[in-house]
Length: 287
Ligand SMILES: [Fe+2]
Image (cartoon, rainbow, N blue to C red; front, side, top):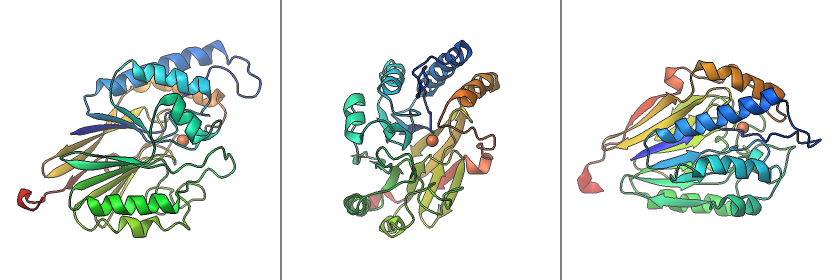
């Protein structure tokens, strides 16, 4: 089984948020070219599931959501969107989910792994952009982890777990540190587990006990993707370039002119913080 994952895309509309006026022709041209080519390249990679770890859009406006989903739906692939804080700046979670026809907080059980998608972003809160989860979500995650036995688990969410991947110990760059997610993750006693996130805009991989935390940089900074290959005996996480350096010029024009986005020139990690092979071997007799 293969899972393709994109980091924060921050698809941006062609008009200014505050005035409604159009951005410059150079911005619109760069935007149209960059996002369409990135999305086409992302879906050109063969996978069973295609996941966005949130901030698919820059401000969660109806225009941004409908335009980006138009580009995505052209490909007729299984696309799963866990919402980021930016996806929820304009509308409630329920309104966004109705518009894009996505579910929230659910799992998919496959023969090779359990895939868990959970929501960590606050609704319509531009001040506090760190993540939060409810007691019900924690109880649900615990139940899912216990039920997974020794099967490999992947949890996809927008915000990192506090004090794991790069910068996740900074204010607002993780799920609220006062919420004890770590104790719940420890309920996964057998087998390997992966937590896949975005939000900080830095590539990073950190391993602790049987959890591997994989954080993905923002697409405008690093037009790449992660391919997670779940094979018998191991899970391989590989960073794959989607757009080559020639599109960095477009990305720079977009990032410079758009609101609510700060380019990170140092978002790209090294090989060791983008790729990993994790052995998952469990004798088939005990499965
Ligand atoms: Fe983001």
